[in-house]
Amino acid sequence: MIFDAVILAGGGAHRLGGVDKPALSVGARALLDRVLDACPDARTTVVVGDRRPTARPVRWTRETPPGGGPLAALGAGLHETTAPLVLVLSADLPFLDRPTVRALLDAADGDDDGAVLRDPDGRDQPLVAAYRAEALRREIALLATEHGSLRDLPLRALTAELELTPVSVTERAPLASFDCDTWEDLAAARARIREHGNVLDEWMTAVKNELGIDVAVDTKTLLDLARDAAHGVARPAAPLTTFLVGYAAARAAASGADPAQAVAEASRKAADLALRWAAEAEADADADAQKGGSG
Image 1 (cartoon, rainbow, N blue to C red):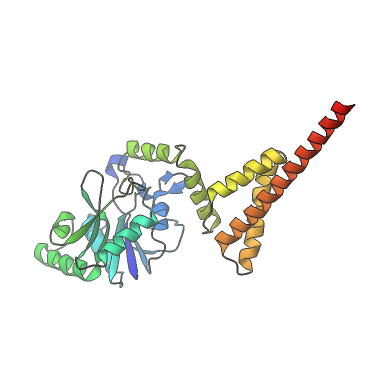
Image 2: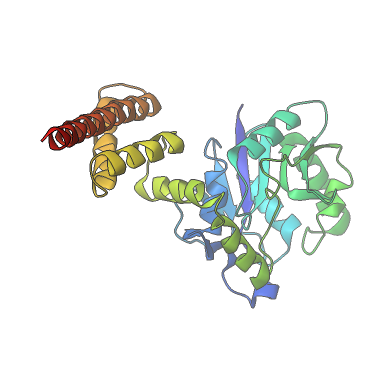
């Protein structure tokens, strides 16, 4: 499915004291980078806001005048797109994920003017939505003609004229629409990713982004391998073994193997070795105990 993405990153962040909100970090990753990671397949990604470092290349633009509001920013971003579908996102969504984006795009590929995420409270979020570009251009042009410009017009002036399919958040991603408007929101997001059930997945995603790799990782398999190496060999064997598994998987992938399968196969081999090592040590210990008992 061909789509472009427009990310609005130029708001004033008044409730945050005017800081550069998209550059604030959650889990050691900028909010903007977290949103960019949710839509890597966009043909063109346009960020409306001041230029700043990003994890992947984007096209920059700015509404005229700067600070003209979200509808003016959307109009400026839309001008840089050509795809039939346009994903529109705000830059402060720390928990937006790829499956949610895919669900929006799939829903927008119907007869309506697009699809909008509906949050757990039943409210539609027009800055977490996928729109048909033709419908957006038509309504934005009408609004600009009617009001003379898009400056300071609310988004509801646009969405009220569009037929949008609601997409409810799933149980797996109930926080997809959570945005960071206040310092309390930011603190809550940072605390959330450090919860026991989230921290490993968040950490693995952060490391993969930092290293510039994109490979499916079976966390349970690697943790089981680390446990077997630590218990059956020695505690320092755990990180050393997982490092060697990664190295072996990288070599296999460089030769054309599927990266995820390469990790799984290397993990299986190393885990089997650790279990054989432990079994051998256990057998020797039993033999020594029998000798001692017979003596």
